[in-house]
Length: 512
Image (cartoon, rainbow, N blue to C red; front, side, top):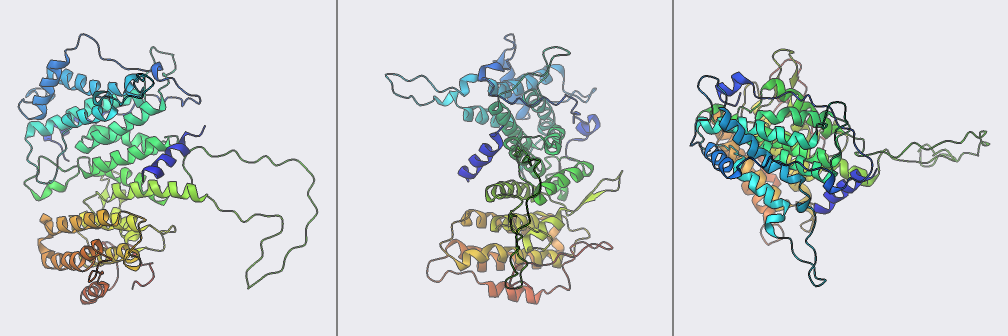
């Protein structure tokens, strides 16, 4: 995996959630900064650095921000419904301290050798130390985690501060009007995107515009895009800290009108077939007279011949296809975090159907022209398990797609116990966790018995034996899954009870 990601970077380097008070203020800033011109040559590390004013007392800032994070202080002013100036300044200063450090050259330059011997980098001078420090202040809500109203407000407004600081690196402002924006070393932009992915796990709505701006921009570098996809995953996955004691815990931190374009952008990455990164220039065809036609070979085996003088080429190389799959897998993982089958923009009436995309990948619908890998099938199946709202959902069809997805994932491994193409045990464990979460979903009471039988069959007969495959007496029992599906046969795989909603079609060999 690390080797593949390194190849991605090398290819690219060639030339309803938040509190009612927060909703009322709509703390999602509009991205108004001008897009910087991407430099072509190398940029010295010391050419760009952001620093806090020396007058700021970081000790006081750190203490105040920590108390806000822990819910020991009331974040919002009861009159303005915004943080008071002291708290706002503290959160912004803390965010800038965390993010600005990513532009300090000392974190990128190794220590000088002593007696011609290399020295290890002190822990406090590693970038990992900066991200670990940021994790102390980024509050991530989870299913059932108890947070107070003030902590929910902190998530919103510290997110505003973090996003503002991150944008100062991704979209730097010129020193004065009329000047071009400063050049930022690529490694610093990458780490800013990495910080965005970390900060977005809080679910702070302020990160949405930045994520969308990067996803929509065709010039976003692949090494930035991968962390943007991870940021989208974190934003989608965050749970509602205010509604933790209700079945509505699943409501995402951004509204449906914002989820629609976000889902669409992820689906574009999933269905993309063109390479990432700079493309080679088109060949120059010399202005020569046409060559004489060569005799053409006869057809063989009923197949049309390749004309003489022409090449049988492919659209993308195998290396480029691996990169495309790398990004597609990340986008599937992000889309798999949705908890609703569809999202609708009430104003435009436009809808997005993540349940359809996930089901197509899980069962191998022929419309997915590039066959998904086993890990992609698994992540899509997890996404079907993560859907915890069953309004207008044909649950029997959903359950059948989940069963088929697990079988499709495990089939290759069952046929070759030595296969190490993906992390089978890790992904299998994640699938079991998704099935267990599905069993305790609040809206699942109506289908409890069917969910329990499905989860138990898939876990005990397929996924657990898959972890121990190769040892005597351990092999996935696909016949048990086939019997379960036969006992719960569905007429068609129409997932939503809506007029003219399309049916997904199994496309893998051996599926019905």
